[in-house]
Image (cartoon, rainbow, N blue to C red):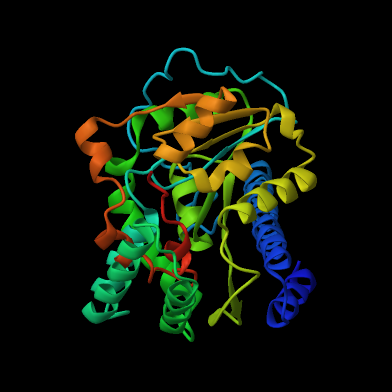
Amino acid sequence: MLGAMAALRRLTQARRSPTERTALAGEAAAEAAEADLQQAELERAEVTHAEQTPAEPAPAESPRTEPARAEAPKKPGRVPKAPAGDHTPTPGDHQAAAFFDCDNTILRGAAIFYLGVGLYRRKFFTRRDVARFAWQQAWFRLGAEDPAHIADAKDKALSLVAGKRTAEVEQICEEVFEQVIAEKIWPGTRALVQLHLDAGQQVWLVTAAPLEAARIIARRLGMTGALGTVAEAVDGVYTGRLVGGLLHGDAKAAAVRALARREQLELSHCAAFSDSANDIPMLALVGHPYVVNPDAALRRHARRMGWRVRDFRTGRRAAKVGLPAAAGLGVLAGGTAAAIAVRRRRRA
């Protein structure tokens, strides 16, 4: 694992085409996810071994202690019933999995925004930074996606966390999402997540948000794991570079393909869920694409393709999703906060 990631870091530092960076971002996300799975399996094995091994008699003066147990994933409240008419996953199909986008699909709004607020409150950046990124996001939402703005946003965001310890950002993620997750989950999407978990399938979060944040959201929902944007770190410190690039658009599809290869999944058996036209490459990969709380472009595409559409928003709430100011704060989140500069939702 360490050798492979070192190779990825070297590749990141070289000049590469957009296609190569997309592939590298996907491979980096899948490799990190695979490492998380292996670590979880190791921890479970250690707990099982501890439980099965007879404890040595404790000294008379010392109280007997119980073996450590793995913490069960926290789930945000009661899981509602899945909407009628949804694809019913086949129980016991180990070649099947479900892939869920995060922003406006699972969470109301953007995960990176909530993390951005947490970082702002901890003095990671200034109001001036927020104002500039909010202005850039407003341009993106109007359809004026300026590559210079995107590059500036990414460079600024990464410079803010360069030299910061990964453990510090991970702790902030824990604090932020412990408070946010329960009230920001779309109950209908949560039910769909549970539907696939109950069938014994792997269920993955796939997001352009930093991997550190994505892991926590996935864990809170009891999901198998997360595919997120990987920020380069050396000795536990962010370098200010991404491994490959943002896990956005085609990079999400690359990550899903790479994970499917590693986990021997059959994509025609799999399902994917998203709200954004940016995720059409990921949705088109699987046999069961779903459109959740869609933007106008994705709704039109889904209608042409005959994809199922689920909209859990009220009209008022739908109009408020993805405010530019919120997105501007989010751009600064974590080692890969630049995701917000290219994860805008295309509204027609």
